[in-house]
Image 1 (cartoon, rainbow, N blue to C red):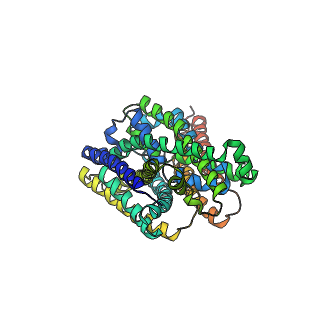
Image 2 (cartoon, one colour):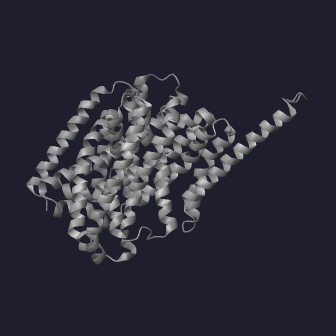
Image 3 (cartoon, rainbow, N blue to C red):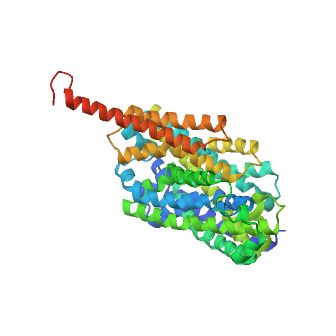
Length: 472
């Protein structure tokens, strides 16, 4: 039961964070401000944006839900994201910045030709769309408890708030509010994780309260399944416009790298804390709804004032992450598809289109969620990451490390064909090899053929000359 202390702390937290979002809206004057914050972000704001964009319902409520059902393996989602941040800092930041582009689609187009961009835009947007659905699914148990709504009403409210938030402030709001949220979410979630572990009696008590299988195993669903889960997050995170966008928005390469490394160290902490809560709730309330594990812990076990701050911060996280993903979809579709048909469009028109796309995303997400109301949250999150990773990861690696050595037509084929075959495989053979592996292998094979094809043509040219019978 919620008390007046819960509601007071919820309202005060929402006022503070909403005020920051309203304040930053005045910085949005152009489409560049809306999508990249004018490229003025330092490392702290970059980290705030990355953490704020990622740490939402899937990393908190979804992770607790997974831990409630399967145990330690719930932390794979956030651990994979942390590893991917380090990967981005070390390998991707400099090449992406040097091209002076705004989207990963544009980057691939500089290597494989402009016709690669629409394929990347469509597939990655579908992947981000799916993850927004996961955020809204995670918001439902919170809103049901706070406002007494039914599930459909909660989904509608969450979708509407995501749309309103991103339309009001764009990237500036996401980065500054993400920084504020970073502090709030880490204080509240770390406290919740410590409380959960303490209530269990530490790791010794955990062993006594829960069976070793599946809860104390890192691979309860099989090594192949669990490795595919973490690998899908590593490649999917590094392939997502939303998480690459802060690197494009950084004031310089050093700030981008430092912000990514800080994020890589911070994100897994949230997963560990959420897992502790989920496992405690499994031990104490084995018959409850898994998705309600974290919300019920907050209201039933944390002091009311802290519980109110925590639940408000979680709700902000859900909205902010959904908003950041919506902004990523808007940016990609606007820059990589709409601008192809309207190359002379003015800034006001591009800004209007960006906001209109966000509205369409919100409506579509509501439809998706109402049709899949009882799905496992992280199931959608892993699927989303896998689709994005298959589309971008191998072609992006080829563009960076084999620049100029892969035939452009084969590079475009990797971007277009591999995700399509991955989707077909997932529906045709759901119980066989994980679709992520299939897609990455197909993408690598196509790109490998493109590499060999170009090398063969260059060898032939060196041997026989330029076609006029003159050798070189």
